[in-house]
Image 1 (tube, rainbow, N blue to C red):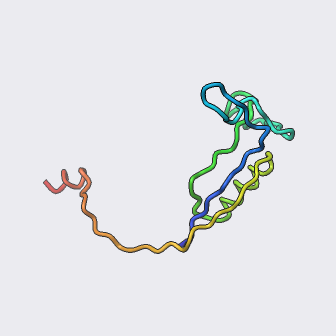
Image 2: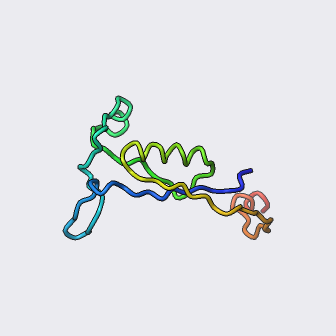
Image 3: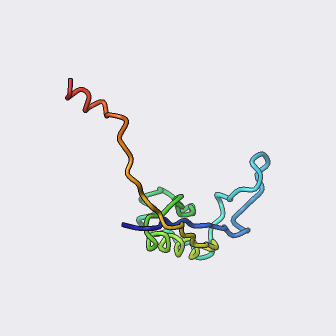
Length: 107
């Protein structure tokens, strides 16, 4: 079992932002990195060539999945810090809620 969870602290390039009149400083949906070259699967998935930043999960359960995503983000120009939690410890808890399906079977 993994003893840690991982997180990414991502800083996007300043050039990827623009000033929106009522939302303020936000990522520009029309910006794309210089090395952007959408491949065929991307076109099938999204239906256009517009660049979209890869999604960032709140937590990663393995270091390798966090590092893979960090490498992809950095390839497109973001700066990423890999963050590791303190060791995780689990303790047993009682079940207090019985699922409705179980109640129907029992009655």
